[in-house]
Image 1 (cartoon, rainbow, N blue to C red):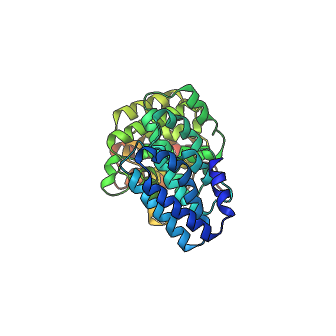
Image 2: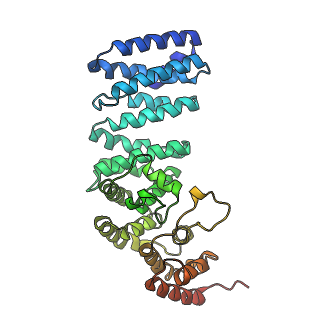
Image 3: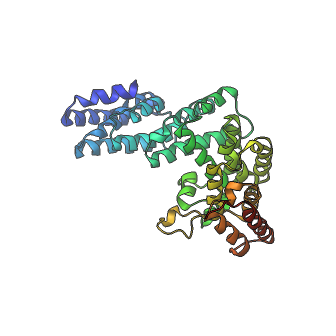
Length: 365
């Protein structure tokens, strides 16, 4: 593979030889016309990044000089492709150093943005394979790449051949990470970008969804619709996807809410509302962790908005597991009746849930 051959050819060289080679690369870059730059970068970029595995400051500085030159040349030329496959091979090598991986992931993201849409659709599911083994920061980047492609490609429908690629994740830790990210994306509301944290999320989760680029209302709606289509097509257990459909049904945007409501009726009806994992997730959304000690501020989850809370209460009032999930059960009742921002509807739900709890609570003596 290109990435493997790039790194293996570097290992045998001394730092002086590497520095000399990088000097020649820089000269080649400077003399190369834009029309031939893509072909040159297909060989040069993975080779240069692989040199970052050395501890030599001189070599690393030379690589950074090359990368700076590359950035300037390609920044305003989206038609110049970058060697995605070679960079991914280099990134996923077992022997790849942290610095090599850190720079690889930057150019992988840049390379992905330059692909044709059909190529993006086919490659996005492959990026999610073994995502559970990536560092958290790199997971975020890969998840955002996939979400971007899903929003661009699948807000209306998803082709069968692409569906099969996403289904390969089922039953894996990779799938759990992807599903959690999908839930966080559905909970995200664009209006929250000006400040504060979106209901149902922590600041770190919100940043995981957006990254550094602000998301317009149109972009986030398309991503949510695309995610709902992908999740629907994956045929995951109803308990796994129920919270996603529930969040969608309470969305502020009508197309998302309508699609969520439809999926909740068609697919959510099969969910076991006494599933402990599902109920625990819903209580976390309802109560949040804003008042919990020993949690860093950026990781504290803000309670869900009243609309989503009301939908969750209709679940709790049908769940014996919810009636016995103390102390979350009591926090929920108190929040409905006395909580800040509660509504008359939530107060009624709080009383109804209190009676449900009295009826179905297990003997704790």
